[in-house]
Amino acid sequence: MPMPPTPPQSDAAPTIPLRILATSDLHMHVLGYDYFLNRPSEGFGLSRVAALIAAERRCATNTLLFDNGDSLQGSPMGDFLAEPGVLGPRGIHPAIAAMNALGYDAATIGNHDFSFGLGFLRRTLEGADFPVVASNTTSRRRMPLLRHALLQRRMLDRAGHAHMVRIGVLGFLPPQTADWEPDLRGEVAIGDILDAAKAQADLLRAEGADLIVALAHSGIGALEPVPKMENAATALAALPAIDVVIAGHSHRLFPGPDHPTGPGIDIAAGTLAGKPAVMPGFWGSHLGVIELELEPSGMAGRSWRPRALGSRVEPARSHEEQPLVLRPAMASHHATLRHFQRRIGRSDSALSSHFVLLGRDPGLRLVAMAQRWQVRKALAGTRWRDLAILSAAAPFRAGGRGGPEHYTDVPAGPLTLRNLADLYLFPNRLCALVLTGADVADWLERSASLFRQIHPGGQDQPLLDPEFPGYNFDQIDGLEWQIDLSRPPRYAPDGRLLHQGSRRVRDLCHRGRPVQDGQLFVLATNSYRLSDSGLFAPVIRRGEVILNGIARTRDVLRRYVSHRRVVSPEARLGWRFAEMPGTSVMFQTSPAAEWRHLPMPGQPLGLDSGGFLTLRLQL
Image: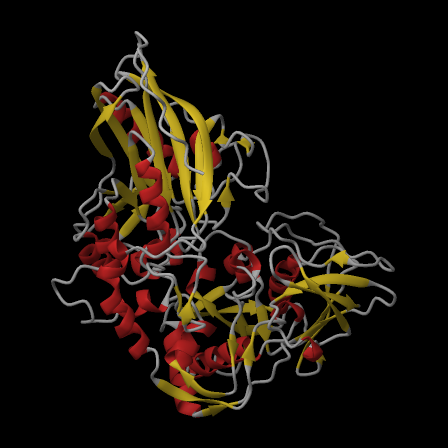
C-alpha cells in the first residue's frame, strides 16, 4: 500500500522524499480489455494502472512517472493502429495521448516499438509531451529520441521548503533489436548498454544531475558484464554513476517472491547491485514504486544524493478504469473491434493451445502449414526447390507468466482477423534457411530444454522448467521424434551447454525414414530467430539464409486461410515423450482445457494457487 507522507521536520539538513513510479511492457494494453477473448479483463491495462498512479501521487510529496518501453505493439489495437492511414497524418496515437494525460515525466523505447517501422515510430513519438530517451541508439533518419534527458523539478523537503532537483534520465534497449527487426539494418545502430551508460552518465553529471535514473528495457541478469548483454539491468545497476534502475523486457515482477536470485539481486531489499530497482510486470499488470530520500550532498556536480527506502510492485487487478485514459482510447478501441470481426475463412476443428507443451495444438500446426506454403511458392524455380521444406513454429499463448487465461482457444467455425491475431501475436517476418539433419536435431534439442529431467519410477515430478519461455519451444512440422525425459537437458534456457553428453531427441525421422546428419532441409522460421543471440543462434550461424523477411507471418497466415477457405489442421505436432512406465509428472494448463482430449493418460487434480488446472500425467 502507498506510504503516507512524512510529517514536516525541522532538521538543520533538509531531506526530500521522492517516489518514483514506473510502467513497462504495456504492449498496447491501454485498456483493460482482452481482444482475444473479446471481453473486459480486470487483471491489466494502463487504464487500471492510472488509478494506482493517482493514489500514489495523492499520498506522496514528490513523484516522478516513467515508462520503460514496448508500449506500442502487442495487442490487436496496436496492430490496427499501425495499418496505413488509420491514424491519419495528424492523429495522436492513443497510447501516447493516454501517457500525456497521465503526465509521464519521461520514457524509453523497447525492441517491439520498432515492429511497425521507423516512419510509424517517428510519427507516433512526435505526439509525446515528454522526452523519449534512447541512450544506446543512433539512427540515420531524424527521430524524436534523446541520448539523455535532464529534468528539472521543484520538490519540497520534509520541512515544506522548495528546492530544484535535476534528474538525469537514460534509456536502453537490447543491442539485439537491430537483428530482431530486419527493417532496422543499415538504418539504426544499437550499441552495448553498459558502454552507452558510462558515456551518457558522465555527460549528465557534467550537466549537474543530482540523480540518474536508468530506464532499462532489459531483463535482470548476471552481475558480471559481458559485451552486448540482452539482460543487463543488474550489471547496469553496478555502475557507480547509476542511482536507480527500472528494468523490463522479460515480463517479470521485481521485487517479487518468484523472481530468480543471483549475485547482486536482493529481492527482500528490492535492489540490484545495491541500487533501488523495480520491474513492474507487463500489459499494465502492475505499477512499480521506488521510495527514495534525497539528502544534501557534498559531492562535486550534484546537490543531492539518494538513499533507498524500498521498492515494491502494486497490482492493477480490479482497480476501476480511469476516464483520463479511457477518453483518448475509446474511438480506436471500437474501431479495432469492428476491424477484427472481419471473416477470413473457416476451421472445421477447434484451435486450442491448452496442450501445446505436450505436443498437441492444431493452431500451431496451422501456422506451420501456412509458413511451408509460402516458402514453397517463394522457392519455385530456384536451386532449392527440390529440398524438403520443414516449418518451425512456437506457441505465443501457452499460460506461463500470462496466467491461466493466456491460451489460444478458438472454437470450430468462422475464422476472423481476431482469431488469426490470437494464433500469431507478433509482427515477425517469414524467413527460411538451409540446415543439415544434424542442425535440425540440435534445434529440437534446444527446444526440449523446456522440460525438467524426470527420474524413472518417480511420482508427481514437475514437468516444465519455469525459466524456459514458451515462445522458445519450437516445433518442427514435417518430422517425427521422441523426447527422452530421463536424460538431463543438453542446454540451459539461455542456450548454454549444460550436459555435453546428453541427447534427449531420439528416433528423428522424416517421412518415416531416419534423418541423416548430412541431409539438407529448408527450414521455415521467422525474423526473430535470425538474430545473432538467443537459444537458437549457434544453429542459425551454421545454416544458409535463403529467404529473409519476405512477408509478415500473420499476413502469410491470413492469405493461406483465405486461399484454402476451409482448414482442418491435425492437432498432433509430430513428437511424443519416450515411455517411462510407473512414472508420473505434474502439468499445469488452463481450467478451460478439455482434459479428456489429452495426448496421454492424465488425471485432473484441481486448481493451483495461480488458477491453473493441475494434471497428473502418466509417462
